[in-house]
Every structure is written in C-alpha cells, then in structure tokens.
Image 1: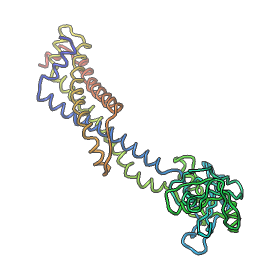
Image 2 (image 1 turned 90 degrees about the vertical axis):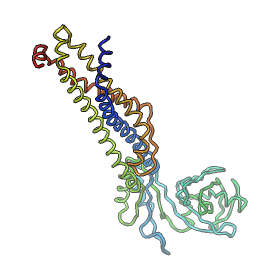
Image 3 (image 1 turned 180 degrees about the horizontal axis):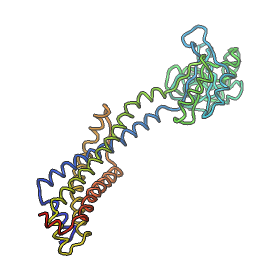
Image 4 (image 1 turned 90 degrees about the horizontal axis):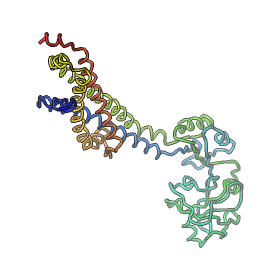
Length: 376
C-alpha cells in the first residue's frame, strides 16, 4: 500500500473520533464559508445602495418654501459653487407661471433642460425634436407632451407667453402631472420675462463621484453660508448603510475567527494523533524509515480529515448562507455561492490541512527511535 493510501486509511482507524473531528471541522469550515458568502452579499448590497444615491446636491434659499415672498439665490453666488473642485455640473433654475392660450401653465427657466428635477419629476424624456439651447435668452421652448396635445403644438409650432412668441424646439414627457403641465425655456429668458435678473430659485450641483459627494456638499455649504439650504442623499445613504457596515464587519471577523479555529483544531488533532503513535513512528524510523514518507502519511491523514470536514461544511454552508445572512441583516437577502466562493472554500480547506500537517511534520522530525521505544 502506498504512503498516501496508508495515511487515508489511518484517518478511519477510530471511526468515532473521525466522525467527531469531521463534524467539528465541518461546523467551523461551514461557518467560514457562510461568512464569506454573507460578506460578499452585503458588499454587493452596499454597492447597490451607493449606486442608487446619485451624486446630486440640492441648493435652495433658506426660507423660500411656503412663503408669499420667496427668496432667491444669485448667479454670482452660484458662480462660487461652479468653481469648486470635483464639480461636473450646476443646473440653475427659476420657476414662474403664465398662460398659454388662456390656460395657466408653469414655466421653468434652466440651463439644463433635461434635468427632471426642474419639473418636479424623476424622469424626463425628449420624445420629439431636441433640447433647447440654454446659452442665452432666446425664445426657444420645450413643452410637455400633454400640453402639446392639448394646444395642438408640434416641433416648430409657436405660442404666446409673457407677451413673446416662443418656438417649440422639443417635446418631452415626465412621470408627474406637474411636470406634464410645464414649459421649459432658457434661464436667461425666464429671468428677463419675470424681471428676476441674475436670480435663481434653486440649483442642483453634481459631484464627479460618490467618493467626493460629502466633501462637495460641505464645500457648497461653506461657499453659500447660512442663506442657502444644501442637501444631498449622502446622509440617507449613511443611515441605510450603517447597519450593513456593522454586519459586514461582524461577518468578516467571524470569517477570520472560524477559519482560525478550524486551523487550530486541525493542528491540535494532528498533535494528539502523532503523540498517540509515537511508538509506531519510532519503530518505522528504527527499521530505516525516512522522515519524508512518514510525514506524507500523516499529511494525507490531515488532508482526509480536512477534506471530509470541508465537504460537509461547504454543502451545509451553501444551503444555509441565505437564511443566515437574512437573519443577520434582518431582511430578505439573496446570498448564493459562486464558483469563486467555492474555490475560496477549497483553498481554506487546503490551508487548514496544511496547518495541521505542519504540526505532524515538526513532531515527527523530533522523535528519536530509541527514545520512543524506551518511553513505551
């Protein structure tokens, strides 16, 4: 029988002990596997939450909402914001009201006509024509599809508002009733028509990344002072991510602890086995057996224990990862084992077996045949 075969057979010398070792290693390796999957699933949830936050910062004058005499920001103030680092866009808007064909509509002047925030919506899609040029105070306009149908307007049509004639350059659709009762014109045009030169009702700044969102929010607050209310979704994201970060840390520490426990258990088991067979090792060395084949025999035994324990742990962990992760987070969580996770689990099994084998290898080299036989 080969050295490796003898080592595998030796792992089953004492069936009761083998079962106990496999169960203990299975629990620790399985827990490591579950925590590995949980850690990855939670990180994916964190990434998805951050991606949903966006990088927009809303800026409005303090005390402007719900008053009969609203306050305004100025283009000069917002010019300081535009020059801040990590800024990629600043959408300034001014809202007003007028009548088109005798019926009241909301008019929004903006330098970003495709931003849905300007019309109180979450989506804005140009369904015909093109966005207006907002570089000056032209008489171009975008009208909602609802208004276009109501007033029989199309791309190239004209209508009267503010005592001026506007040409429809584009038709858009939004996901709110208010947005679908809106006309969009250049910011300069709305400022001139409402006699609000250089005034802005609200602005939306866009940071270049989520990494800089918090810093951009703070810089805008500092640049505009107490007269502006500056908000972003980073606080909401932090509140949502707080529990996830805690569970992520817990899963990582548990992963390290369980993997370390499996390695220590394997180490101690092999120390016990080598000490039990000290006389056997002494006899093998006395009749000319070299350290290397004896080490390989015990390494095969350690690998058998770890392999069986790992198989039990990987199967159990794969079935329970989702429910355990959901229990940790307190919500339904989809956690499954990928090929990379399984490879990681197999690598952990090899490391655990290697750690246990190290104990056997070291002890075998220290056993002297005469001393082993005399001690018995």
